[in-house]
Image (cartoon, rainbow, N blue to C red):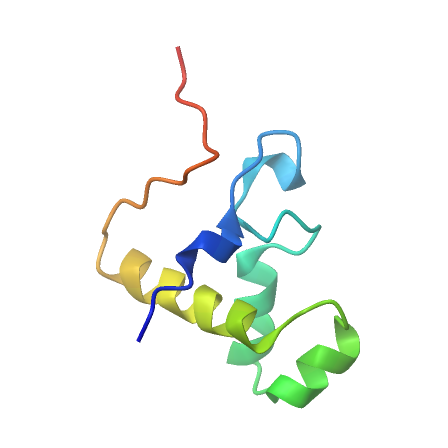
Length: 81
């Protein structure tokens, strides 16, 4: 399976720098919360029509890595300092 992490973006001025889906105003946390609440992909797509199936895969991939405490560098993330 090809990684979908490139869909996760961290932009300091967007959503307080939290990881978002493709630079949209939807945080990975919000998407994962909907999944954890038992919403189906179809219900999530109704609520967020701009989402694509790969966005859900990316959020789950991100969560799996975070659960294992793996640091994920983002291509568009600026280093402090």
